[in-house]
Image 1: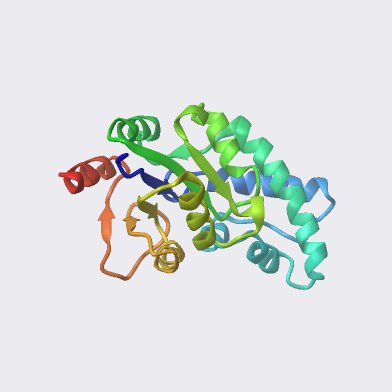
Image 2: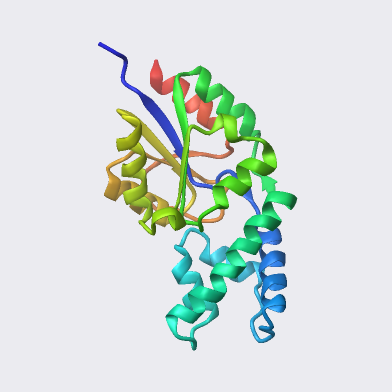
Length: 215
């Protein structure tokens, strides 16, 4: 019998990196290029929205616009953001490449599931040269499915038997509850999770935690 395939699936913002400052820059530049001067994107607002699906961002920044118009403007901002982040990146929250390599050596597949727009995970991987170390990824914008559905989709299409999801918000925890996947709280990230869950205080701790769990 083949051994059960196992995986660690990661959230991105607040878990693998902090790109908020560059996202804010890119969004304000995109708004200016589109001739929209009455919307100012700030880091504190962005931090409170992180982890939500992109339609929620449109509702926040363009509350008085028809939904489709707000999403149309946001789509231009998102593409501009992807290009900006591919070039300028963000701040890694740990030795991501080393952690991914260690997990592979332990027999874990590495995945990314994020609530961001299509192309976001690709911009992250391209900037840091991580394409070869991420086995699968899904952005919310790829299929407009919520995080729980996309976690289940990744598990199904890769034949994963044992899986962990690592994230930093209550929304991540709730998605894992819905997907029936064990959750590991990245306590160094943007959000707080008020539930009795496993936690890591830095990204590198995931390796020791899972190495202990395997024994």
